[in-house]
Image 1 (cartoon, one colour):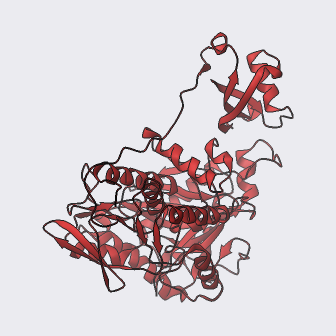
Image 2 (spheres, helix red, strand yellow):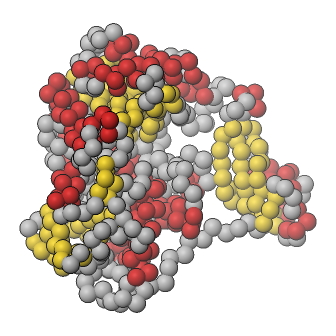
Image 3 (cartoon, helix red, strand yellow):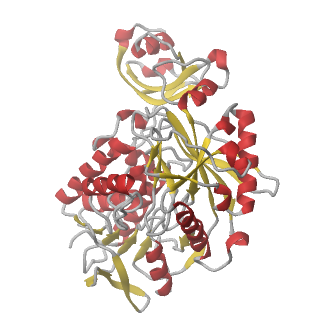
Length: 519
């Protein structure tokens, strides 16, 4: 099979892709046995040459005669799970949390005969969706079943972005995308330069993966909160779930970045942890058409809602940048604790709300919140609680121009881009002054890149951009307590759906290499 790289196709192309490949190879299309898209991106660097860039994988006879700089032999990207080890497991391996990291750790272990037992503090995805929608409607919060907690993790109520800067070593990323497609994700995620599933499609994928895990002998328990670890001689011996002791010598901690009560428990058990930098700020909303008009030379009706990525260094040397940009999406109340407010962005697969939103965030570190392990977490919490006090539990909303002038905004028509209730306050009173200064500088700078950017509406606070801690793990991916495997975004080793899923696979591999799957 041949790889045809850097094939340019006009945006308004009307030809069949097979004919384009044939023209590229200077052959009749009937010579092409089969083809598939391996990569697809939009090249918008030069507006008058706006086009798609493809890499095709093509099957054709006499491949050698076509080889050139841009036509090479395909190197298959195949994921291989390691052979099982020999050490006997006395008890089934346990996974705490069913976000992307826990889901893929459970999937790989179940597929290869380890019959993992999963404990998820929240509900199954079907019930979780009902709880979230009730919260957005009435403000009634279920602290274990919400945008942060429950089957699928926080990424379930997001844009479902799958792009990552992590290299595809060992083909773990290939495995993640192939599994997603097998269980209901669109095929395009395997080749798109900016792949995403969307929260609506992701829910179905998660449910299908769950059923497969169970069919392979895995066990999934909902409404099951990790309360304690049983440790002896530097090794984990068991866990306590809802007051019940369960024996196990393998615990995968895929707890997510919002499990603050669990972080405190782990610290009390002398699990080695350190604080790490993160970022806080706001969400900014614009009409999607504003972004599309800037990103595209003209508004082609068949093109997807466009995105952006913006960065700036503030006058006091802080990074200000866009994060988790959601084309055609919604801003949502993502709270998971009583007397606390936090926001996030979410998109459905079609990205058709008509509004673009993105976090605009500012880096913070120990100089801002202190050097103790959980000081960063407490810093986040203080902003969220202050918001609650000022808004009575609603999201804070303000026009950016009013934010610049410390003025509370008049009524904003936001029902088409916000999930949850809003309150009109001055966001300057929520965030520390150095964050306010950096945000104002950054957003005005971004206006030079996308004219009209500083006409947007901001919604606060955006605090849970990443875990504020990292749970230390060694070469075998275990913590200082043997048998405990910190995993995913909550443990500080990932940032988003794809990297979390890949880390779940990586941890499953380490467990498999050590232990036999004969239970």
